[in-house]
Image 1 (cartoon, helix red, strand yellow):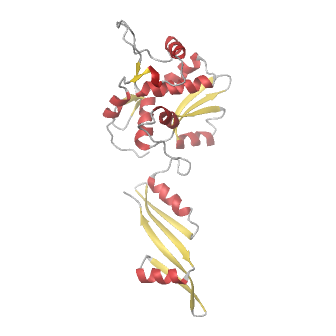
Image 2: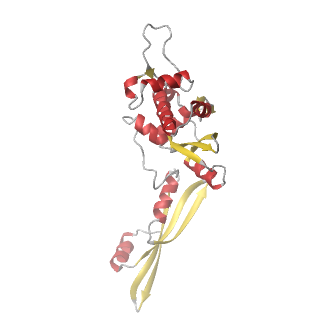
Image 3: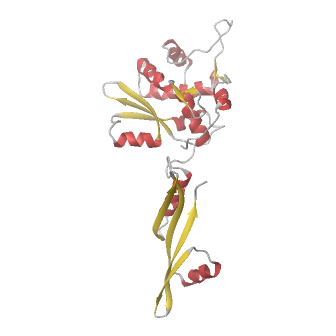
Length: 255
């Protein structure tokens, strides 16, 4: 993700507003929620002075409950859930120089930037390490051996499931973790008509993509010459006739 000045104040207020009733917790029994509260896995935000203690949850609470439900399916104990909670809710500093619980901050990235985020639980004889990682950091730690035996929960999919009316899950299969400029480069690379590609970077970002394309259809070559759709073109003749051409296209991608 590109580092830039942001202000997450409104998003934070929205994620922490107690707007959901218990009925939104589909497939999760009240006894389960109660046991999580007693174990200190889920914070109890009910008014202790109220005659009837109604349960209301914030969007962030509901996301956390969704994560807990996935941990329950993995048969994590309450003690292991608490260990995960400590990491998942530790304070991190965001681009607006304010501190937020890690789960809240990474939910910003999911909802505002379509960023895939993984909750990685490493284990041997039990849970021994927990990380919240974006796609690049996740695969980097896999490559260098930092992460070995583990389970990964997809925060972006949990957010999609829990907050479906306000969040549309993007397709990460083709361009996971890539910037907009990197995605454009990938599209050019996958175009088999290009025989060479040159990438120029400026100030650490992709500035220009220069690609050379082979064209064999004579009519297309004539059309290119007529319309001037090239920065540079090389034409090959055989027996006095045009056989093929190579045109160079420069694409400026830096914003």
